[in-house]
Length: 527
Image (cartoon, rainbow, N blue to C red; front, side, top):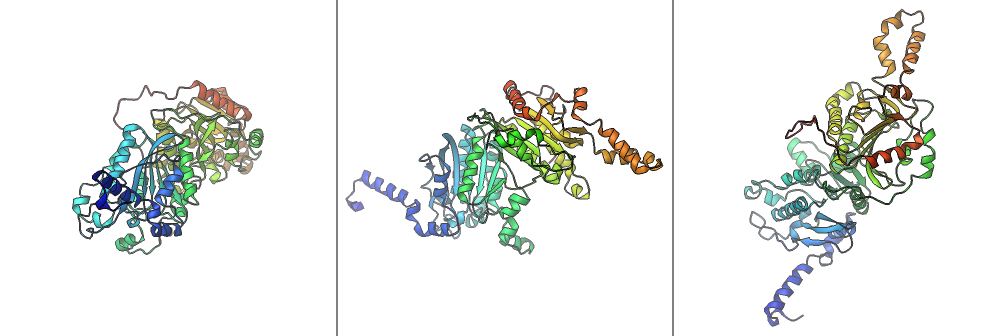
């Protein structure tokens, strides 16, 4: 190319533009990209290329520069101000996305970069596109954050994020340091993915924690995936690497419409996995105390390989996940007898409530598979404020307008049965039971010990009298007994579960109106 002095004005302008654009690609910054790879992470541009349809990314704001108007920023170099923003498509559907670039000042948020993110969020709001955040950085840029001219106005993003909630799918992938700002962004998203070994989440990192409280800790102990995904449920799922994390995003979006004004897309129908479908008749152990894997039941009902669990390692006593039934997307809420006998504790209630909210927001019918002895009891349960967290599960179910199906497989006890949409409490579009079901208000043994303690103590053989009473009451708990007074719609053959659910989905409207509800501006969540 000729020297600038020999170029005409038009060619000069084009050459300057080309040089600027080419300086931003990964190939122009080999040392920075090599450092990112050495950390086990892909670059921001590599992540975008892996996530979206080939060639579909249209960058917006790539040429911006940081403001450089406060102390110690006069010569600050921050290509694109540390965040790549733009439009793309995933499986042919438009999305808005922001990918923070850790190679630029540790992925910190500058004021211009923040404006770019706000523009993407506004576009997602106005045009009904999913909003995706690939987060890898240290939150607000310190040099700019310590200047009231920058920080006094706060951030419009959070107001926009609230407006996005329930309108479009919002996704955050924590792909590196995520303390402070990135965690705040993620907290308002529907679906959050972490990467084991590289990502962290939390209100503040180890340095700020030490300065504020004197506590000395490390980043993984404070906010690694084992803590925030598995133990605390702050993230919905943890991936082994960047590629797997991005694959989870594509799979998550595949079950949902682009916005709440659209219906979920239909997929190609598939039959359930044959081996699981054939086992349904004998899925329940003869011993009512023996556990089994509820996922085996689910796989016998839904399309093969379609179950996608949300928060699989958090509160494993409740399974929540998307699946397909004859190509229709549904949300599954199921007690897991392998953990706590399927009992609902505070974590399970939070997990279930959030999942129900997502399904109702985006029009996915809810399928409840019920087998639980009730809510967890005891001092440890009370320490978790379970009474309020259990109410949140009821609250979200009561707000839901999508079709609901409830199937009692084995135990349906107490308020837990109601919170799992059992019977007619929440006007399920279908409430049925397998022949193995037992439905009652509380544990039979505990009820007898409370209500019949005098008779038991007065009996010649107290143990025999107690066993007699327990046996007598147990005769009244069965599925056929429940159907006699029309407390449930029917008792079904386990092998008919799929066809019964499908018939319900085919006859039900996508939404129902709560005609008895007053016109009110805001329901108050228990949590």
